[in-house]
Image (cartoon, rainbow, N blue to C red; front, side, top):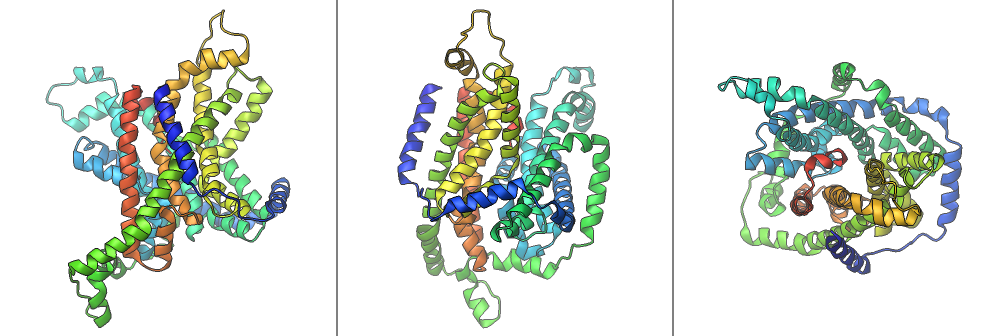
Length: 498
């Protein structure tokens, strides 16, 4: 384990020398002071004007999650098929904002865009996790069923009762993730909380931004009080009723997008210019088009995405190793643990996109804001989980009394395997975040995707998104091999897939 850690530390140090890390703003302290004052004096009276955005955030999350659960549950029964596993890996490797980018030209800026952007990757995630839960279920109850019992009946009577708690717990956790996804979809124009957050930050209305964030924190913190299993069907039904009033689809636009606009420009050029909309296959111009994008955008984007990812991955690990002790009763008293727990909840609840957006305003668009945002968000999640693991350890009577000795010689060696498993399970997610945050100005794949969308070059955007998906699938494959090498089951890390 130590050797694996040193390898990744060495890689991150090499990447640090290649990264674009600088502060380009001249006077960030004045802006920091304004943000701090806004946080102390939130404009709560403005919240009434944003009630529809809060409602949209909830309805998008409920509808997207419901569709994701439905299709994910169906696909989980076929997850043993190689084609299904690949398809699920592909859809979950693309961030929700990139899916929204793809759906915008098809369905327009309406709720169905946000719902589908959440539902598709979540279906891939649910298919994988539900299949893993079912595979790890106790098989003994199945022995009491007749041999020729249909597979669906065997599942409902022999498997589901034993895994129901795991399924519901994970689904409830994914709803929290869906709320974060729904909120940040507002940053691309959908009418959720993120839309007003971006406006408030861009215009320097930090008191208003603080009020919106506090409402979002309260929404997440109160889930255990109002997100009851018996009420979920009612919530989903009301959400479907609310969004159905705003949906408008153009089948001609959908057909044109899927059969024409996504094709590379050289294939459409002549048909577009003469108005015939014919499709050709000119190999020479097609290769030139692909080669130009490969050299100018794909390779630089891939390089910067990987560099940012490896720095953020190791930074997340170091953050976790430092701060999990503040959450454990083996090292900190009740007051310190309570303060640390509240801070960790705030940081891990805040979407990394919002954190990075704030840091870009303060420091300018280099890799630094993205690194800090990813490290804080993911480090808070892993510190929380590692602190929980540490608290499960019962110390012997002769355990070291000095906290430093207890940390290095007693607690850390016993949780280090699970810590590495948690970290490498987040690797693919950190890669997705690194690609996404290019939208904010750093030259990862997200920067070039956003530029292609802005220039109405959907064919280029789809090629770049495909490269993003393939990169994430490759990282996921490597991450799985590392976790198998560490001999930690997927069940131990399932709860941090978000």
